[in-house]
Image (cartoon, rainbow, N blue to C red; front, side):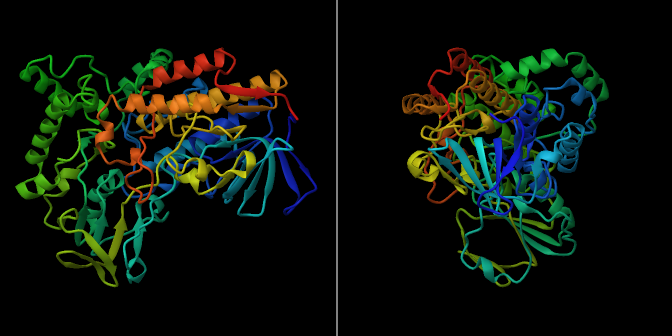
Length: 548
């Protein structure tokens, strides 16, 4: 393999760029891939659609956007020097600080010279004769790469509003996933927010504080727990740093990839009601995802889950003064935490404001967007601005929008027509030398994403290095290994309560998308062991073959 990038004559402006590795996306995944591959002597270039690095934290600028786990845990761990060069200011860092951190990483590691911004990859085709990936961009670039790695993110493609009449509204509309960089001032405006998922739960308190009146349209309520955010405790941070190596090891071996949840190994059903309530109260006071780990069977036993669901319902009723509104905000149709558990600052309190109204869009659905607002089955509403907080085409959306073609010209869309199929969430049978970072079939969105990203990047770059060192040209998942892994992912999911919720984990928020539970719920530590075992056995389940 070449050890440096070259340009040769060929089709496309300026010829064809020849690389060892083409990486799509410059978020946490793409940036670490670039750093690691470059250090291993591979020629690599990252192609990023945005005009800056940061991935999720470049695009998601809506008011209130912040990480939902402890800042120091949601950061790179591969370099102590990098960790020591940055100090977080808050327990749960907001988007501007997260983006500043990622820009700091890009500068400190000198990554920008190999990142091409404002460049969206539109197609990637495997050339079976040359045994290379031909990658095309919307800027007219053509890249020939031995390997193509999709670092496109799990929540990077927004769900577009599909209400009848969307184009007729005369006022401004906003999507939480594509917020204007300059921000939005809602002062004195009548605002409608559609959706009550994570981005809505974070942004609604901020919008309500500005708007003349805020009307929120909720189809399905979400469970949310308090963040209790504030300045990062410097003494706690000092303790963290003193125990950093051990903490990072524990993260990698844990179920979720983070320690702040402090999992309790007891069953909710084996303790007394008083002990159970005391545990819930203590974790509510701590805030964040600690609540979800209060007992070991909350997402595997409906009876255990009912205890925490009722506890949270009591908290909602205690915070929200109007009983009817409190009832509307209380989930009743799915178990606690089987949809993404949200972490908020003042969300439920917001519904006590005189300028906030909650509309039940399940019983009175939105029928159309109008030039002056929107109509439901029961009433017409007038707005100066509309905010769509309707989420993402999660896990597969970014990959499906690229025309990816493997052996025989078969598209990834065709292969995934009945739902995504991968081996370990890393590769797809029939697509040699194409890797996905935190793809479907890996822990990804059910884990600390940075821990999962580092594990994937390390595994992928080790595999590519193994091929180089053993004079191998191709690596491809076998159909049998892929089928077995997909069956295992489904089998593990079926031992939990997660499939009982119509969540974006199953693609339920996208009309026509196959209902398949996409992430691997077996745990970060277990998954790492499985991946390591596959590599130790000479990449069991993969076919490695010599260069052409």
